[in-house]
Image 1 (cartoon, rainbow, N blue to C red):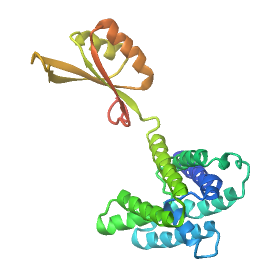
Image 2 (image 1 turned 90 degrees about the vertical axis):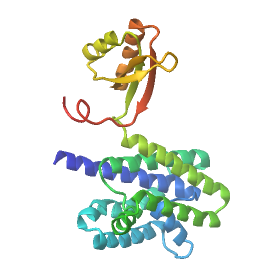
Image 3 (image 1 turned 180 degrees about the horizontal axis):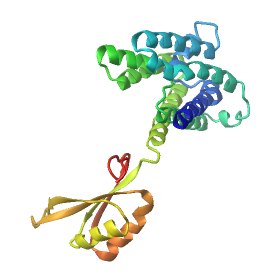
Length: 280
């Protein structure tokens, strides 16, 4: 029950950040925008209604389609954002506290992308949905087996392209910058707390290094069979996954045991299984 309440709280907070990005920066700067809000911006040129009302109308249509073609179990997860986002968008559009920041279009695009990415990341981290074209993607995926991500990319591309025809080039490019920043930040939020470091260790003193990894640093390891490239000798490579806070100590240990060890360190976005997501 506690986890369920926490997930809904994340969805609401994420919705606040997403609406703030549009209300404080994207709409005042007239940036090109993707998603349902971008479609609402296009329609606002022909329909004399506030953007928030148009967003609500589009979300309701997609919500009904999702209810018919996908089922209530899925669309109920999008119910919060369907109604909350247009309301928050209206609220943040009237806030003038960040007027000085929004005067700089480059700063506005970066801030908007980070806030939008943070909001989207929190919603996805809570297994929620922001509604909108997410629902359309799920419907087409169910009916025609088209990947949801492809549907989302196509929708955003078409909407940005339509706005590019109406807007000057500069606001369109800033809008693309917002989308890029959003993608990077969303990925960071989704993988937060799950990122680890992979070490590949090539050493003639691998037994001593293995002993230290197992006993001193309490980390698992795997020995991979290999062959040296020049002398064609059989060898074994140590593979281990570490949290960031152990990397410095492990590196110091390796080069204390073998100053000539060859070590490769790579970032890993997710690690699952026994010892990580499953108890040992």
